Image 1 (cartoon, rainbow, N blue to C red):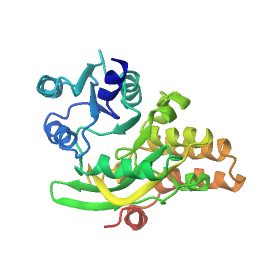
Image 2 (cartoon, rainbow, N blue to C red):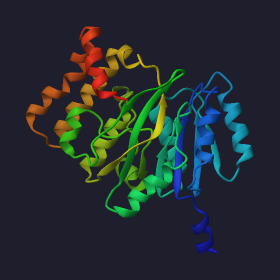
Image 3 (spheres, rainbow, N blue to C red):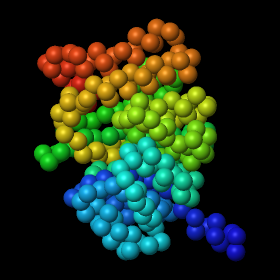
Length: 274
């Protein structure tokens, strides 16, 4: 009986915090349902939505009761806390992310797991990512194939939403840190904690994930989030024992936010290339 129970456990637990995304949630969930790799569970946690997001999620849970778990926060707690609540009930050996307004390839899990099979020493696998809006795909972001500590000087070395991560790595660092100083940079801080513990990862240079985003959103990013990014860069230099000259890079997000829009656009296009 114990062996049978082990056989039916999901290999991948997908964690998805959902908030006011009723118009796009169905498409996001369908991307998981249609994966070519089928041993997954999807854990949805509604973070205090004021629209019909929870109702729609409930309909999917009833349609796939053996595959989907639905949780609900009593109030809006933020992404970090919501994802940690999903992690607490996850049963898979691997943890995948998905957002309620994004899309991904049906081959995503299959391709990511293949990298783990070939490289058992890895704990993180992510992919290139495309940005899209109502007009179509407008941007593409890529990170180093095998990030090392010094890559943290330049920002997060993995795209968060497409990631597949061994649960043991999440457990080793206590999941996501819940702090206002880490809003919008929770993934950057997560990877730093994992690398400090000796975990490492790899990026697949194929856009297996598409993030729905306004092409001008980053330009409007609030200064407090730029300060948060600077803070994590500072921590990366300190915790990963990088050269002290790295502290100069910690100031970059703040300085970029002070640049004239014309200069900012040139720098931004270098990062989000098609």
